[in-house]
Length: 398
Image (cartoon, one colour):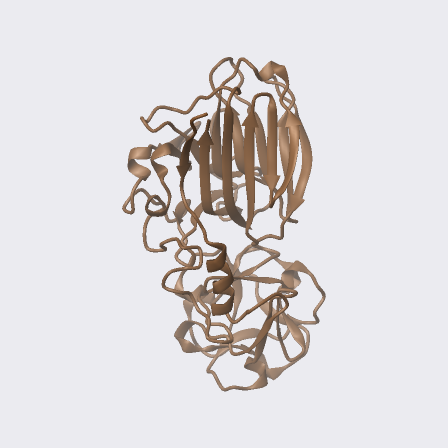
């Protein structure tokens, strides 16, 4: 059978392994010790060289002391100095939460993921940040939503920093359309008129100078990832209470994709979630023409504790059954493959495959894929929300 495949991005596993070496982490369980330098060429420092719980982690002139000697350990993802761990005070996940030294306790507040030149806190999905982008000695560091700005760029022990070409192989200096073939997607944003979110067509998304939005849809300057952010307060569709920054599958001729269950249809992605408050949908198969239902056929959810669930709709009238399908720590890259063939869903998470039957009540409907950040919580906050970064995205039909 002839297959139509759209390849949006390819990442080399060898490049990822090589990047770990660049960052001074050369293998599983390896650790590198030394200074961590940041804005203004200053060092990450423990105030007063104190090993007391709660001692401030701050920016300070580099002096080679033990208070500035940090061990970045890939085996437990901690960052240690003076026998204790770099920690987010009170395990907070809010922007501006301060960073301190504390007894190592294995919590997510003390786990950090190295991403290009940024340090992402696992518990919050936020980045180690120089408060106020200011460099006076003693400026206590904090966590903040990742922006790719200079005050979140760090040079790690061993000399690792953000490479000119990131390990993903994606170009960090172009719009998402420069790394991904967005001619087969439209984009819905969490802005616009009530009940009528702004939609960006494929013609505006495609190409290295295509559409970008610094708040909701952009290229991460550290790793080139296509980044989506959906706040808890934003414009929604009439049938949803939740905001989204999400791609909707289109055909190459610009019409809306609308395919039958018959055949073989696959959406594949490599991604990571760096911020989420309660729950975020990162991929779905949605009902198209064939009836009056506005439900999805399935949604793939990610939660702050790393749990991944498949939400399978029971019928076009509604009702969803959740299936636990995996767990990946916040800030960690993972992959999914959603395959629909006839009346069967085949889902693969990091190589582990499960299958589910599609009820015959869906047979009259056609379908289309969606991918991005469809936040599943709402409040009056425009800063809390869900941030999702894609490194590959592939659609195929046959």
